[in-house]
Image 1: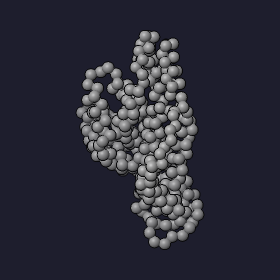
Image 2 (image 1 turned 135 degrees about the vertical axis):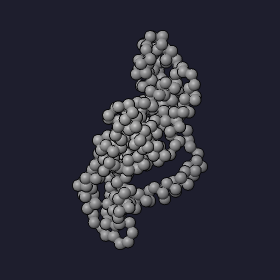
Image 3 (image 1 turned 90 degrees about the vertical axis):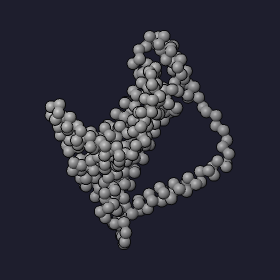
Length: 305
């Protein structure tokens, strides 16, 4: 694959060349002002207020007193909070791997020489535009009724019971539903990435006798690294905030086996634990920022599109 390697190297060098940095007219910065104002009022100010009250005993209304780090210390001995962190990060890791593998394989298939590529692309992106609550209720019916009925009819014992009632396997249902809705978004990014790869690279690979699998592993994946990084970062960030799918599918159950961090924070706000859950949200925010910084530092210089 000498010719292929040369073309890939040349493409990488072209992407690595410095871009033309042109002067930006000052007027364009003024267009950012409305967005900055809205972001500050809707995101920054509430976040600062929440962090402030995390050091108090406030219940959300009425009088309050400073109690220092009491809420933060209590978090580490709260089994529900610890379990929600374990579940959320485990679920996010499994889901982001599943989503990116499936989406990349589908993107390769939908950009190959097959018939009806455009209709198939349209069908595959439909889950992205459907409400997560609606999707979760539909899958809840399937997991609770249709799948057990099929298991009884076919004599498959492990399908006869609902996976949603099994504390050991309910997380799998959450992964399946979340991935089903998240795959279309990653798919669109991967399709754009594959279409940006010069066709001459694959033609050279064909001349060198490379198989489709070799082309995937030695051409597509290396040249798609930037797109993979984007999908991993966006996916992991989104899955860490999982709430609506879990709320509609399992409600955090059975018991608290599928309780996410977001569900813990929201449920605490309705039970008078405002300051305590603000401390929980602050810790989660710090962890999310550290993960984002780590991801960017690892991929810096290798994710330029």
